[in-house]
Structures are given as C-alpha cells and as structure tokens.
Image 1: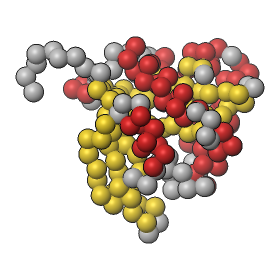
Image 2: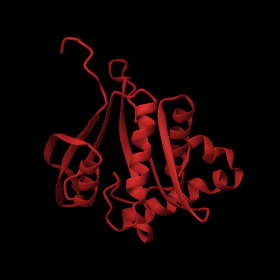
Image 3: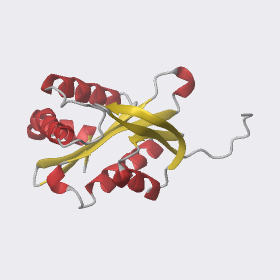
Length: 181
C-alpha cells in the first residue's frame, strides 16, 4: 500500500501508474461500477485526474493510496480537501477502485482504512463520501469502518434510464470544541 510520495519516488511504478489506473477504471466502468462515469474515462482524463490528486497530495490537500500485488496495481483511492474556505477542515473520499480480479481480498477495506488514517493525520475534521444506493458492498464497507449516513437523494444518479439513490456518508473526527453551531 503506497502513498503518493512513495508512488512517485519509484520511477518504474510512477511511469506505469496512470496507465494501470486507467485500465482498472475502464474495466470497472464497463462492468457497471459506480465510480462516477457512465462511459469509461479516456486515458487523458484519468492522467489529468491523477496528476491533480498527486499535486494536491504534495500540497497537503489530498491523500492518494495505491495497492500493489507483485508490483502490479490492483487498487487505488483518494480523498481531496474541500476548496471552499469555510470547508477547508474537511475532505471528500472520491474514489475507491479495486481491479475486479482482486475483489473479495480486503483491498478496498485496506485502501479505505489507509485513507482514513491519512485524513486523521492531516487534521481532517470530517471525511465525507457519496455512494450509489445500489452499491451494497461499498455501503456495508463504509458503515463497518465507522461512516454514518447523513443524507440520501432519491433517484438522483442517472445511468441511462435507471435511477439510483445518492447516499451521503460522513466520518466525524472532531472533538467537542465549544463552538456554537
């Protein structure tokens, strides 16, 4: 399990990261995975996204984790700090993607747990995420790691003619600080 610094410090892994991530994301989206795309993303889109996440991680505004098995990428995930000044103490977990061949081996759990640890270390107060309502495995994983549902938008996610709930989760790291709500 590598973070952004470890990943970019290995020239061989860094050179192959975007291409490997693109393959995982493309395969998952083609199979109907709930990753925010209806059609598989282009190589350029994935490369730009990952460059942005790595840059944000280097600035302390994100965390990226990459899971490898025998130097082959099998999963990735990241969170980004909110840009709005009043939301800067918080971050959004945006993608957890595990190669279909590696499903069921705890990689998604390990990625998410590592990103939660990274968020705590970065001083994030609330880590949020949203998930498609039919993604039962992901919803169960998030609840088992301490996330709680704080909202649901019925039939909000459109995939062709199908509609799914958008389920909003949060993991609150704050201590009582005495500030008025």
